[in-house]
Image (cartoon, rainbow, N blue to C red):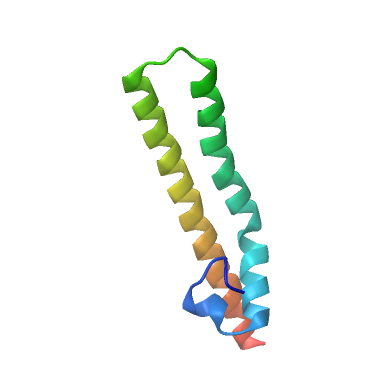
Length: 84
């Protein structure tokens, strides 16, 4: 358990770790799709610095938003294991 969503609620136990990561898996998958789509689009187009900068910023914002959501989902799921 050295890589992953390392927040206090997921680090409390193995059960919390696995529950948190199961809950976050879908959001993390979606998080990775945005930057991949942007990279493919930019690679297929003629280079325009302003557009590429805007797309890179949009891809980063997409990634951060979905990782934030995944972290919240992981935290909630991990905390439910404490009640069991």
